[in-house]
Image (cartoon, rainbow, N blue to C red; front, side):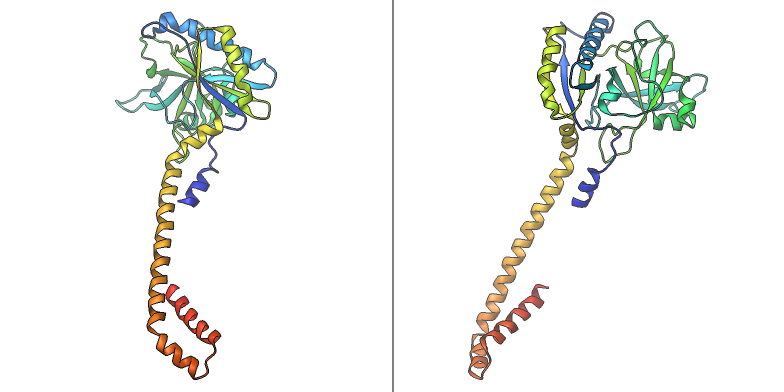
Length: 309
């Protein structure tokens, strides 16, 4: 268990957690979230916050996502390639993330082919999507073949939605946990997919990432004073929390193992003490016939060591 835990910490998760601060930001929305009404305002606010953060001193990149890597919080749905005929249940199923700003650079997710989202990926423009390397290879053979192809994202639940064009391919990310395989994954821009709440991801240039928290609070307050910030964590903390189950199991089994060792040691000591006590006459005879105390101790310790072994 210890060896497995150590190896889990060496797994390439598909992102770089160093020097990254995350925080949930929520807007006060009266009643139920309505994509047509609340979506544009929410997307505009998110993009304004990420743009201001990205241009602030000490910030290397800033973005937002609907679910952090290795958090286990995932959503998924079907993705159909335009022009391909599918049998029932044959379409690819992929996890999807709604992102804002320069999320991929902020999270340290490497771009493999094409481009990431930019200001041109807005509401009313050509619908775009970014896919993972695994998705590109399984569906198109290579990463380069995926760029420019069109897919229908059935998870959008919008009738007559035009196909989305794949504009980029990024590295595979461990979205659910470090000990599982990377899933097929796609990303859509928040301006084209209204989403009620995203988690900000801010990469600092160096030092302690929590030092960027006052800047984040100030920026959010300036853009929208009613917005709230909660669940502030570094990305290293997110990764550490994702290993909590394995850490608990390792600690639990390790505790029982130490307890078993202590019990075995106490029991062994008791048995040897009883044996020595029963041989007091023999030891006295050996000493009376000229045996040295050292030789007697060596004999008893040797026999005890064989039993212990």
